[in-house]
Figure 1 (cartoon, rainbow, N blue to C red):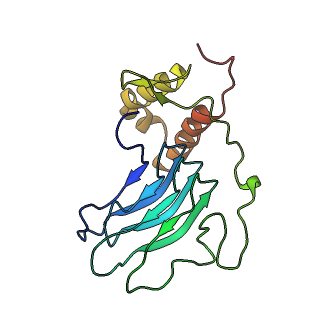
Figure 2: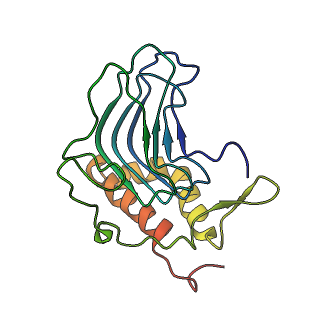
Length: 182
């Protein structure tokens, strides 16, 4: 393992900084999925954290008061219970936040929200600290092509179609089967 095994570490040293995490996914980390790292005022929006070895969400600090913001956060299948320590602010529970898999109304995250949680084709860190793409060399080729051909693609496609490329990359990252690549 390289580092502490956390997914997203926000803040630090119990100092305010208004660090923001948006539109993110944290999964299968050795330790925490999303952590304030002792920052007292981190903001997390539209984020899914699942299948992390420790907590999916950890908000804590020794600062005099917290000002955490959390909206549309989904915590699912964490190795430990979400750890949220608030000082001088109200609960972060809401209809749109699913802490430990449940929202304020007691509604649980259904497994059907996740089309596929198969973890066999995602990159891992090897024993030398480098990336092992687990047969996903096709992913690298597509990403390099897109980076090298950006100007060419801009001439062919208008800006509204960029989402087609984003969806293509996501599909390639998570949905190819074993026989597809090297």
